[in-house]
Length: 155
Image (tube, rainbow, N blue to C red; front, side, top):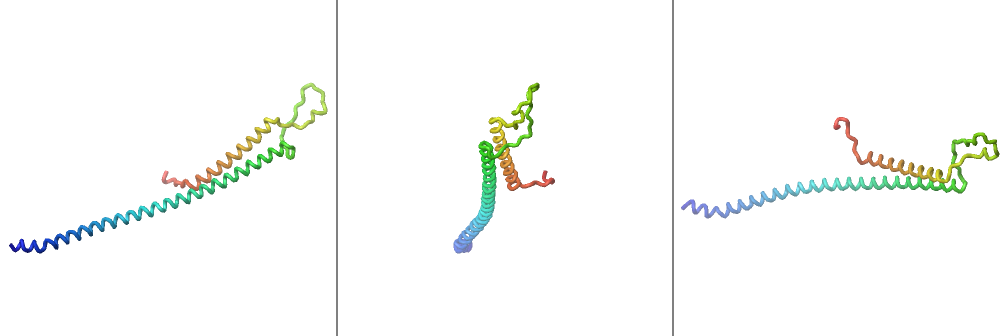
């Protein structure tokens, strides 16, 4: 009887104590999840910031090399137009071969000249060289910036 009276009086207190303990345990669990979430958020924000910075640098790199490439193309196009109208000349290291057994004539001393097709091919080649040079330079700089160098020990 004493036991019954004691338990009937203390039961609400044990229940309250168990409820408070459960709430404290749930609060502790929620707090540790909040801390983990904040750490993950901080890491994600740093990664996003790094990615955005990398994208900005890549865009600047692309803009710079595109500008250089366009300038090279304009220079080659200007040279090609100047050669076509006679303002500039292409220098060749060539000699004119005389027909064998033919007598020397006045026009044998004419300077050698490229054919129109060879001249177009020359300017196409210069343009292609300029494009590849700028592209390669841009790629090399991109690799230097974006790809970390590994030490010999890691390999």
